[in-house]
Amino acid sequence: MLGQAGERIATQFLEKHGYEIVDRNVRRAEGEIDLVAIKDDVTAFVEVKLRTSRRMGAAVQQISSAKGARLTALAEAYAAEHPELPENLRIDLIAIELTVGGDVGQLNHIQSAIEA
Image (cartoon, rainbow, N blue to C red; front, side, top):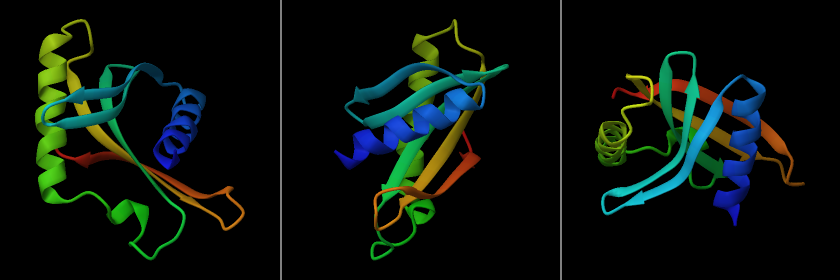
């Protein structure tokens, strides 16, 4: 449920900033890509992290090196299957932290959060 809420918030943010969402929740054996978006000549593979508290650390701290390697492999495989997409690949992070009342307290869009 939180994941879906985070992806909805991230989608609205990206569309407001000129991105076109071309796919979401892409599942493969290696893992999942939350959002695939295009802006200008870039295909952005977006990992969405939403937190309601900092007990588990800030949302922006939640991508391990192993997760980064999986996302890179997923992005490259997806791009190979979709030659119609822009060739410039980027893996972004959208980190969302909600307030106690459930509103968006902070949203950070980190472009090139992981080197693809």
